[in-house]
Structure formats: C-alpha cells, structure tokens
Length: 604
View 1 (cartoon, helix red, strand yellow):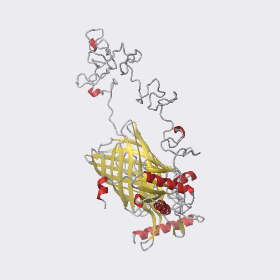
View 2: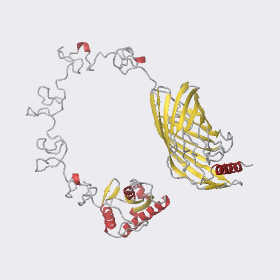
View 3: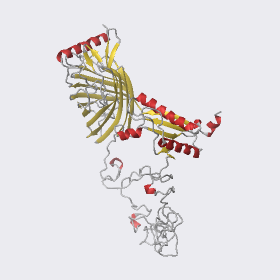
View 4: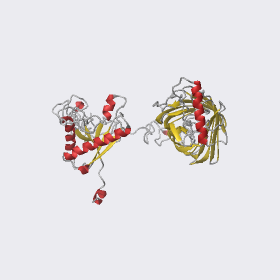
C-alpha cells in the first residue's frame, strides 16, 4: 500500500478516534506543528550543538529565519493532495544565551510566526480549522552543563534540559497549550578538519485528544551532524539530520508519527554568527515539511584563553621578567614588565632627573635637570611672561593678554570682548546682547529659528508647530518634502478636489520649476495595512499614477517623473493606531540621482 494512502488512513483513524473521545467537539484541537528546534546561538550547526562552553562569562544572541512548506496535509487514497491544514509556516526565532564558569550555559529562544497559512480540511467528519493569526510560538528555556572534554577535543559530552512554555496557540498550530520538557544528552567533537555532533533526548509532551494518530505525545528526539571545518575552524559546512518518534499509543517509529528531516548548511562563527541551510523531510511524518529553509544572523563573544597577571601591570606573567612587581613593557625580554628607569619618559634617567615623575628637558643645572620646559605651551613666550602658560597664544603688549589665544576666537570678525557669542561664528548687530551671535531668523521669513520648523526654508506661520515657518514643498534629504498630504477619495485613486491637495501639488511644481538640476523624481504611493497586501499595492500604484498625471497636465515634463506603488511595505507609523495608519497613507516625492555625464551622452 502506498505511503500516502497509509497517511490518509492514519489521519482518518485519528479523526474517528477524536470523534469518539470528544463527541461534543466542533473541530480537532491544534498543536505545535513546527519540528525545527534551533541550536543555541553560537553553535557551529543549525539544529545540533557544537558544545563550546568555554569561558568565565560569554554571551551570544541572534535571529534565525525558518520556513517550512506544507508541514500538515491530508492526501486522498489516489495519492492526490486533499488539503493543507498548514500549507506554509515561517518563524523568526529571537534567541540568546550566556556561558559561565567554563561549563554551564543558559539560553532562551522566542519564535515569532511571520507567515502561517493553510486551509480548513475535514477528515472522518472532523474539521481541522485554518490556522489563526497568533504570532508567537512556544518559548524555550535551555540549561546545559559540560560533563567531559572541551570544545575542539575528539569527544565532548554534555547534559541539558529544555523547557517549552505554552506561549504559542493551538488554534494557529504554533503551540501545544501545555508545558513541555526535554532532557537530553549531547556529544560533539573535532578531528582535524572534520567535526561532528549528535544528540538524543526524551521530550515529555502531553497527548491531547483530537490529534492525528501518532502526531503528538511524549517523544524520543534525536539528531546528528557531520562536516568539515574551514577558515581556522570558523566556517562549518555539512549535512544535518534531526527527527523524533512518538513513544505512546504504539506510535514508535511508525511513518506518520516519526518526522525526520535532512538539511545541508554552512555556518560561520567568529564574533559574528551567520549561516544558511536548506533541506526537506525524509519521511511523511506529521510536521515533516516538503521543504525547509533557515537563515541565521547574530553575534557571539569569542573565547579568550585566560592568562594571569599577578602584579596587574597588563603584562602577562608568561612574558613578565618581574611578575610580582608592576613595570612597563620593553622590547628587551630581560626588562619587560620591570619598573621603568625613566618614569616620566623625558629621556633623563630617574637617578639624575630632578623631576622624575614630570616630563622635562635636559639642563646643566642639577636642580632643574629633567624639569618642565620654561615655555610649556611652546608659543615662544616664556612661562614667566605668559598670561596663559598652558595654552598656545599670541604676543601682546598687554601683559594680561600676552601669550593668550586669539582675540577673535570664532573668526567672525567681531572681537571677543564685543562678541556676545565668542565661541560661535555670528553676525554683527547693534544690540550688544546679539552682536556676534548667529542669525535668529536664518530664512528671513519673520519666524524665529527656535519656533521655525523649517529654519532654513522660508515659509508662512502655522498654528501646527511641526509646520510653522515651512513652505508647502521644499527640497531636503534627496526628497521634495511636503507639509500636507495629497488627499484621495477613500478606496480610490481619484484626487480630492479642492485647494488642499492642489496647493501641495502646485508647490511641488514650483520646486521642480525652480530646480532645473532635479532631472527626475520618483512618486511613491504608500498605504496602511487595512485590506489585502495585493489590493493596497495596486491602489498605491494607481494613486502614484494619478499624481504623476496631474503634474504632467500642469506642465511638468513627463520625462522627469516616474511612479511606483509600495502598498503597505514601508510604514512610517504604527499601523495599530489610527494616527499611525494616517501617517502611512501618503505620497512621497524622491529625487533620483542624475545619470553619469558619460551615460547621459550615450543616450539618443
């Protein structure tokens, strides 16, 4: 009998059993279908552990993207697909861990569903509902302890336990609705360029009524990996296998209750942690996908072998010629780490230096030999005559200013004593309080800089402080910024008639007219997340096209304009609030970079 026929029979039998045991149930109970359990961050493998538990304290953190295709489906007796309860799932796993005392590790992993798609399927009279939109899976807390060997040895053994909290949702097939615990034994090792890892564990997973036969219950889990380690053992490439089998209700090692997956991947760990792997299910067990893709990115603090420094002089004992006496570094191994014979580094040995802890200059007078320079700031004015002996200055007939810095520090042409802002370049003013200070109204629009939302663009007063002093449109950050949005008829690309939208668009026309250097702009349409992604993208494109048409009819050369709709892809506000959604419903005018001169000449 074909494998898929067996799967259908098992699925149907399970549904019938669920009907008997839950006669009042409206639909089958969901469960966590994702079989991918990511390795702790910093591992050389994707689902197996390399057991690098070295260091007094180290940490690792990262993100793993995990996609699974068709992990839960039903087939007809003729091997045709009857329906996919879960046609695709993708998760973003946020995780991190700390290693301490050269032996222990504690890690946390939180899976967030990005996509979770499927359709309702009825088998044996029991409906299996479409996944809900719950966005989090079962969070995992893991604790591991190294028992034997060290990372890089031919054999390292560790024992650990993982605890899964019921933060996921049964309705979305992202969780079991109950606590799961999995003690496990881990082994890993290296032999030259070859590396391997293996694990076996028992996962206590309470059986829940309504599951297909063998799909849930306490399991035996297992995994293995082997490959080559390149680039000084930082890059690992090789295949991995992982799987489990249900140990209850005679489900052990039966096809439907034994999902097994294989993958081929690569992972680079050296401060940064990046990897990619792909594979598919090797059996037709429940949760075994038709395809899986994983991408990992993160950071992991590298291991540094401890070296002791008894005298705390930052020269480690193995190269310190005076390990119990603080000293200095020296290229001569006999003196490296020993006290400095010239503490102030002025070239005059301590024995003849009258100021051994203060850099100085050579003198024939033993009382001053090695003492500081009589012209400390090296401005040519001796300390005894220098009114500012620690600061380089200029000569002056005024003893109070002789050797002091320039009398016009900010170089704005206004002397310090007359300059109300002597450290900031400004402009001349008859008001002594403002003389030498920056212009209080840079754009000359009658609105003070501190009240002007656009202090460098002349505009009109506005009661809205975010628009006060701003023109309707102006050039900033490679965009033509607009202070008010173009209004459209709800659900339409038609521009609302009236002065509000027209004033904004006419302001854009003026900017284009005033800036011949702007060769091309890209009109971008954006929406909020209300409605489907496809509908929103089409609507945003139509609205961008409407604005482009309006500008061309108003006289803008159509060769200067392109239009593109992005739908809900680039929100600038929080789509969970009305204010955020209003921000996201917008049109933007982006200035495209001019083509290189040689390229422009090549065009007909």
